[in-house]
Image (cartoon, rainbow, N blue to C red; front, side, top):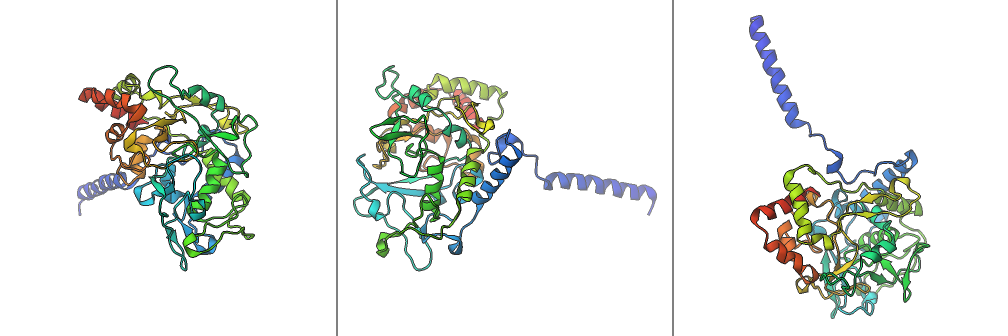
Length: 405
């Protein structure tokens, strides 16, 4: 074999390997494409605690480690893939009634339906007379920032009587909180109820309550805060405190810390002209009346979260969303047709976390961003009408902007 021919073979193989490696090796993922990493500025010890919480968040429970006896899923991450939105395969079902006088079905498993079970038990069923709603798991990232928005700022955004006559009347969900939750020293009350902000109907006070309830109602995990395993009234069993708890306070607190310190979704393609135009159209058709662009945290002992400006596109308030989204199910003072403004951050990354499909709105019924806009009614009918009147190029720019979030 001549040296010239050998050189050509070597050159060919080198080019082939370069091309192959380029196709095989994953592309570099930038910070604005990930939302399950820690927020910048954590200390070494805080990063360790974040990692500990992340492991707990991903832990897959089995019967021997506390799963059940009835449950919805086997891990936190099973419903919140990549700390983003859930999928219809992991829909939650909440049941109760259409009035706001308290849930009458608590002795029959309300408010959470556990549709899975370990051997020897049976799945729950929605009792006769109960109303219900299907809920897709919301995005987790950035919740630590939302938890720190001051109640004063939330109340400033509320306008329950539409005093400014703009057709938007966002209101707070004043709700009772469990006795095991310690409210903030600056918490405001109204008839013994507190300002709540988490959940599809803003019925949960803080992330400790959210995590403890999710462990217990979604997975069947007991903690010192909720030392009772969920039991099915159909099995004729009563729940009693368990001394041998499934997870320690350390594990629960680490999970809470993990969620509190997740990096918020970062907007992408901000220099794209269509994105810039879309942002202007977003304001023009008054989407920002509810999806408020910018909020700020109050004091936090975690310096990375302290008095930080961020861009979630929510006001954390309840709004009348119209009859089409009325599931006849209430939580706290939230009426059946009222839903908390969903943060729009992370919207452009949702498709990847949902298996390259989109499932938007509280129950995932919208299969595209445009579908979601057209499902808006009630107070948001104004923006929907404005959207319909846009030209096709303006709609394209608006969607491009929303996909950048």
